[in-house]
Length: 482
Image 1 (cartoon, rainbow, N blue to C red):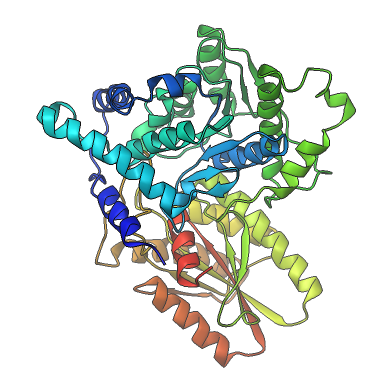
Image 2: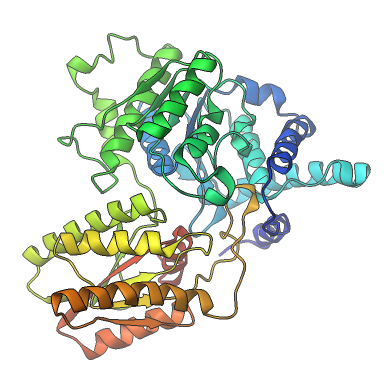
């Protein structure tokens, strides 16, 4: 049970959530400049300047790359601090010390230290020094936690973009990484890959080595230009060999693992723990790398969770994919799991989609990718269910972007229409019977509906893919009490 002091901290934290505003560069730039002032108020300037940091931006794979990196470096005996976003169930997931989320007691202590100090300054200076927005505050809190806990390395995941992201207040990381780039948050970052790449490359610092994965030509050109301007040695790394076992599932994870290996290799060399010969690729990966990669764990990505009430009848396949490219990766992973399961289990299985995405996303880019990739691999959905999220505290991203709470089901019905158009087109071209789709008013109702169907169809095992939103995944995990 959460303590009363912890609940009070969450209430205070939620007061920093701001309504979505129009994003213009001057607004972002102004907020970004305030971060240096906040660091001064919290007396964190020196501590942050001395931190040894790995900084990671990108469209997809940031959290996985950071998780792989943290696991590898922890195996070297380093005390690690990992900051990621968003959280799925509890805000403390964002702050990990040696791989373990921060305790309620420590969270409360550090939270109120930062909150009170900033509040006093705000009250003294009126509007000249407003309270930080939600995500900015969480970044400042991360710096306070990691400084006081005296970690040896901070692995810092960018929230959104890079150039004006709150994490980019750091001046001299040890090494930077850019994961796969694609179209996401276009209303903020730009409508072309070149514009998006320019925002992500905003984390490059003069003379600091950087790595990226193979990118589309348009994005790669911009990354190279930005790197050249800052005299950054930017190298492209290939996916890790698939003979290695990874703790995170999905073929796309070999790309993220390859990037993590490059980041950690450079980090260990830069701080003098390993020399170049000790990490020579021709000798294969060191045991500590292999162990770190195989033990990595990230909630909400390629997770398989049996239902707590009906574990034999309902299995949830959870993946927080929310971009067109990650939808394809999710579909590939899900299809592979289904086929493997069919070989092992003789029980009849039925695939069901449980879906929602934030209204800033375009479902006509997401759902076709998911559907066609599954069909290509011989997996189809018998039913599709569209529901709203139920989360409150975790419906926030960088710069406090909040998905408005909508009482009507308009958005869910529009998702259903996109799905039904795809189903109709396919049924007509292949002479198939159309599958059924439903809009249900809440996630708890959807879970009850699934359980009721499962109890009636005892010979059928429901395999439910939950995707489209990390928030939806987190809400489901909370609901089934995992």
